[in-house]
Length: 404
Image (tube, rainbow, N blue to C red; front, side, top):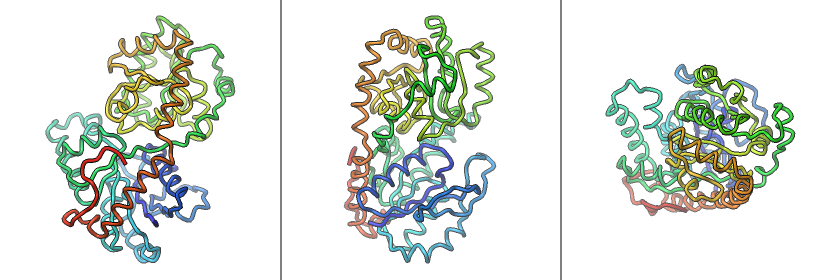
């Protein structure tokens, strides 16, 4: 198959969506498919010899400086070139310009269109616009989400929790749960000693790691409280925060106010393929308190690296955190979360066993297997022809299905 993916975000912008696109593209290419990307031009030199990645002129967004908004007419000017490539299917990855231009292009190219629903927008609006009445916040997320999902031939979600949310919105388009896969071989190459040496961390110091965006919805403030409790048991405890984002400055202030400057370090973004793997290897426990994750790629990467984790069992994280294999669920409450962490940190034998279990659990999300599941959903859409891009027509894709 020849597949065209559209997204409002991609590397060098670091995000879970970008990671998901790269993972599925790599897996589909491994199965013999051609996958081209239409993504924003970030205005910086992004060296690549990959002719399948087409950068579209884009505006900066005032409300989110890291993001870009593709210019619709720039996409329209590419229609003839895209038609010449004779794609079998179009896959929209994000709900902004990519959705509206993607559905338009699919009609012009007369090919089926599917979309992915990566983000729990209803929860995000609550974090960023708490002043908006709840009923209005819900409408702002639910109505556009339902309309967009109904405008495509099928929707891919990363977790059963996200599928349940969309069914609750009244989405009747076919929904398929296909988590993003991970490259298991790439996650086992971290250098524990080198990372600790670079950052001046003693070999025997207990280290907690958070990796991800520094943003309100990640609930990192709770992790600071957890460290406050753990310090009474493990005076040298250290929390590393790998990532960056709009909430970094307020959190840095909280660290000072809570007198945690010796226990918390902000590392900024770490290169995903080098330094972040070293960080996984260097840590003793991954901690994650977000209640809005639709999957939680960093959790899977940590498991594949043999790093045990403690996380709030909410949304997508619940799919594997509750397994008890290399993972432990914790309440979204500081003392209870700290108690779970302390039980693991104080038991070297348990931690070693959990590391083995973590690697075993991660194999269920291997990249090739997830790509095969996506390939199967694509095949159903392509077999349905134009009906897959027209919800009013007959579609052979299943409506309520939890897996590939």
